[in-house]
Image 1 (cartoon, rainbow, N blue to C red):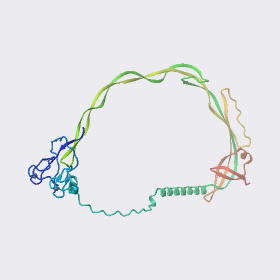
Image 2 (tube, protein in one colour):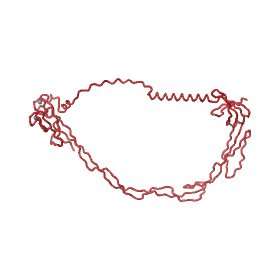
Image 3 (tube, helix red, strand yellow):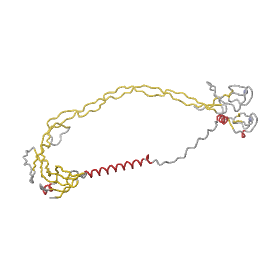
Image 4 (tube, rainbow, N blue to C red):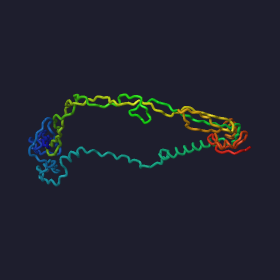
Amino acid sequence: MSDRIVMGYWDCPYCESKGIPGTTYDCPNCGRQRGKETKFYMKPGKVEYIQGHKVVGADWYCAYCGALNTAGKTVCENCGSQKDESKDDYFSLKNKETVKQPEPPKPAKPAYKPKRKLKNNFWFKLIRAGVIFLAILYLISLIKEAARPKDCTFEVQNLTWENSIEIEENKTFRESDWSLPSGGRLVYTASEIRRYDSVLDHYEPVTKSRQVESGGHYDYSYTDNGDGTFTEHSTYVPEYTTEYYTEDEPVYVQVPVYDTKYYYDIDKWVYERTETTSGNDKSPYWKELNLSDKEREASRKSKYRMEGLLNYKTFGHSKKKETSFEIREDWWKSIETGQTLSVTLDDNKVTEWHKVK
Ligand SMILES: [Zn+2]
Ligand SMILES: [Zn+2]
């Protein structure tokens, strides 16, 4: 809907006539032309449309006689002064009335001084954390170094060996699967549920709702044209109602799908036992194996150790302790019981040694 022109009204301040139509410039009672006190208004509950009215502009104010004239006139209807000499119109007069005293200027904000707040700086915090972390690492390494056994000698009291053979056994297992694997000996088959399929069973009506535009209305607002009329603005506001309807929705059932399951026997090599021989001489040997055809050898491992008394210094104090080390086979062969060795330890393992006596 296009905007329409609506009649405004004004009151005469001289004779107190009220509700004079905006298209009338002279008071019908006292004959005075409307002046700067004029305020156009609309009568509550009454909208009077004006046909054929063109808004050319707000009324201009004659500075000589104080009359308001229609924008279409170039000379004052009341006194004949030129429009060019007029500085105000209906709206600028209203604005002047409402202009307030300017607020006192606020005290200027102090100029921004960037402060070097180093402690709140992200990078400062990061670097500080890094320095603390490195310091802790250094401290830990110092303690470790002090605790590390130094000037170690080892009195060899015993040399031992240990040989172990891991043995596997061929065992039969009963298993089942949806197919028969190679090596599987079928025992029986059975029809079993492998999975469930969703199958459409039927449709069921379901009540649903939706918003439907059911009509609407216009909202109106009015703006003052400053020439004794107002412009009506309309906005269409649609209205909605909830509509209910039914829709058929599919209902599914879970249907089992059967398949053939194979039950079979299958042979597998599994750990059975470990055969260990050991001694404290220099002639290690392996256990004589007497394996059945259901058994096999899986792996062989040898371990060599030296047992004795470790003399060492830690935190500057001399200490002794009974201990043993696992060592390489060639070391074990060249070391003899009763010897004293100078040893280097790392993480409780011998990394280097030489004979002292
Ligand atoms: Zn009047
Ligand atoms: Zn005038």
